[in-house]
Image (cartoon, helix red, strand yellow):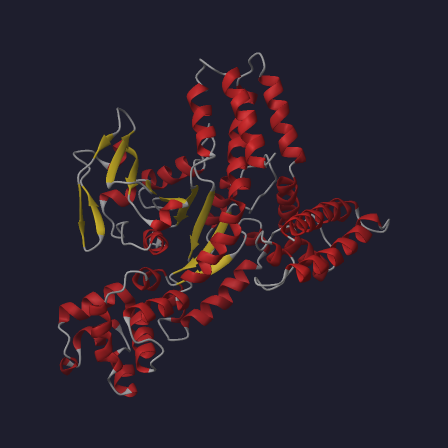
Length: 489
């Protein structure tokens, strides 16, 4: 029986125990959530670029990026067959709202409601990217308006219920005390303390680190790598990825008209183009012979930024890309968006069942603790048995202990252990540090070698107790990979 099936079974048992109580509806919703797309929240400080990054992940300019009323409300973006915006007030029944879509962005009419009166907005939008994930856009942490920031804390770090999000993409510009406080609070303590398994850090607006230079992303990658190896950060997020959010959003919504305008810059002599793009003001106000109106120039700056205009025109000049499709692909890759998507796929989607079961079991454990009924002790025992025996949860415990520094050893041994238990992704090739297209025979041979190494380490009397426990988990991970490879062969 799979982890999801075991979780569903104990939830069904709990629903029977708590039928007719205040927890009845909540438990049913938790069980239904097992079959829904993964829920990923996009969070961060004010003006970190959350809505812009969300648009890039969806592939459409849906979320407003200005400082309007709706950006102060937690907004869910989910897939559906129709276009709909639903407001869930803090008091009263949900209601449908009118909306328009101007230049791709949804403009929502709150219908007389203030942002303070709305618990959340639910935007249903047919989009391929939303079929596998529901994205949650949140107001900024550390907002000048404390009430706005509290909306995010209330959603992701509730006092009395499980968090509605299975995972979080947290945007950082600089590591601030509020960032650490929020991420520590977001991680529960029931599975492990602390647990970075359901959080990814994004070094947002990465192009601004190099002041818009053509090599800005290289500088951002070095800083992200340094952040990702910082002990405080490793305890809170699995990885830190640099992303130029504005360029990423533009890359997936690029038009041929914009490519035509960029060609005018690309056709200039290199020296003239460099002088034109020394600053946003120079690009907007000089060289009237360029053939672009001031409105067109401002629009390009709003969509690309100086870094994006400089990079896109260079790619066109060097004929790296010629069409909107080709340029879109190049910009998505160079903005860091493709790398972020791959990491989300590897660390979140491939662990979908683990993350969803984890959320459900934590909710169920909280209910059995707070409300005892005839039969609830058996439910609690079932939850505890799954938590203790399910190997994915054991991997999470070891991963968290590694990140917290509770398991120590030679750097190469610790690095291999973290990789084997899925610290960089849960696919067999990632665990074994092999290419994605590695043959099953190579995977099996490498897994067998790793199994022998970690069996020896687990049985060695000189191995510390903490490393011995971790080694046994690594042995089980190797055995699991070999079992899967054996079935596939």
